[in-house]
Image (tube, rainbow, N blue to C red; front, side, top):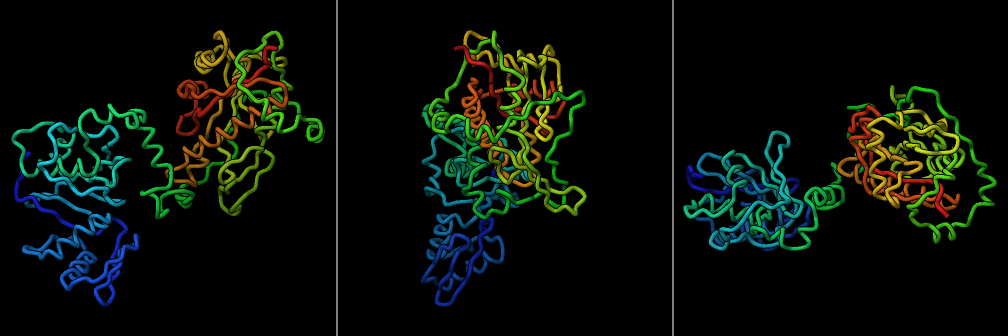
Length: 455
């Protein structure tokens, strides 16, 4: 890498930051509410300049100005763009305070590599390096920097620019000592995609202003909301019996007994399989659509908010249930969709189809002696239902909904004397093949085996 000119730094306020200047040498940095007192005239001039836009430090700036710049950097209030001559190379964009000062170039060892958690991607026309463990993003302006960051390693002919880049990468956490992340349990145990998912779907440094996190309704006015009811599968529906809820309120097993007796059942009695009536009762008690409330009814596509027995964020209810029946008294083998609005099963695919076979096969790893489930309830999500409203967090919320629906299935199955066991995985590609639906529109997010337990 060639310097191409003197290496210099351009400073500007970090994204979202601004300075409020008061009398008597007082300033407050927002939104952190970081107060500065006893500022000199030169320091006040510096702050006014930063409010006006990017700037470089004037030659021969005094120690007070240099010291204030360091304080602002330590507070996470300054972005820094490194350039060489007229070439802008990269920028550090902080979203919180750096935990340590920048290391001196001489203190950065040769044996460093790009962090396994760093992701380099394009966003709004810029190439950005992000790391969930970092305090800043690095915006890359020059392709040579991208190549250098990807090929970190010993370099005996290191230039001033290379030294600065390596120092900034280590300082920001985008580069680490080689093998360190693989040698230490906390960083080895987290896979990159799981740590990214965790950080981006929770409130934290990147979401404190709430502008692009949570129920922002970002799609309102650009896209129509996704209807509460999915398109109906063709074919003759199978009506399901409706249980007598009034009798169940008095005759059902007590909640304490159900909670205490709940367990995962992995061995089932195929000589006495689950009946269609039992499957219908389980689905009715756990997942039927009880009612639908309409919001903004005057629009071409109004928002629909259903109610079902389990909770759902925003009353959006994006989950669907697909019973895959191998053996059930009163039902033919096959893959069905539970129409929670009409309380019927609608045929989707033949049980003998290759896609359904791939959906069912992993369940044998969960059950005793490699047996196949009597009924596999494939839990699917129509993510557009929730992604229309929520930003960053919707998939995390979907998985929480899978959890509450799974527990509802567990407890109800226990109350009914049925056996059930949840699976922590499923074949989403096989689900798409069986249903013919793009996984961006509807995808497999969980599964639950249910049947008659072996006594």
